[in-house]
Length: 214
Image 1 (spheres, rainbow, N blue to C red):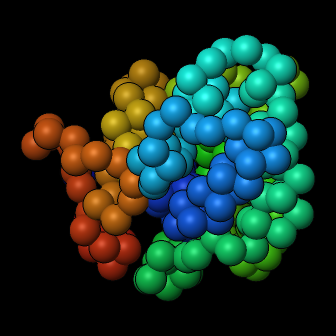
Image 2: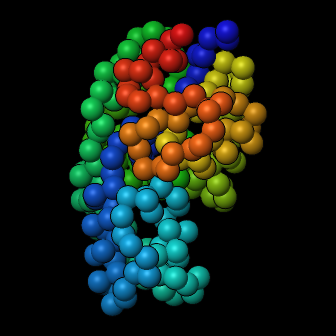
């Protein structure tokens, strides 16, 4: 069995639980714009890119509406809300163990660049990761996570045979599949259960560490 050496992590729902802070930001944004969301504001909407999510929540692609919501959300979340992100139990110990055992760690997230960098700094995680990437880390922004993973692979010349992506949603598995690389889904995040017994799954950070070290 090939030993994994490069690990690309999703962020929201995989390393941190930012649902509460994000949902508070969404509610505040809709109030600020005098609008009502068309779907329930719960953890299932956390994860996709901001503009895509706001359009879905508002039930419209009208740019003026999405721009109002986006501006209101950013003014709250990017200044103070990001600090409410909670780290899942066992994650710091897992990252420490992986780093000490010689793994190269990366982040590929749909979360925007600015709050992502603030969260990493706030949690003092800079030393764990070789690099941290968001869709808007590039100019122009990338369209989806599959493109983002491809950019990381190319930029760091990663060998796909010893690289895996860790996420919590079916989208994460799809993004890895597009890049012909392995994926492990965690069971503590926001994603619905993927009914595919061929996809490795981890029930806890300690189990994920064991799976990656096998």
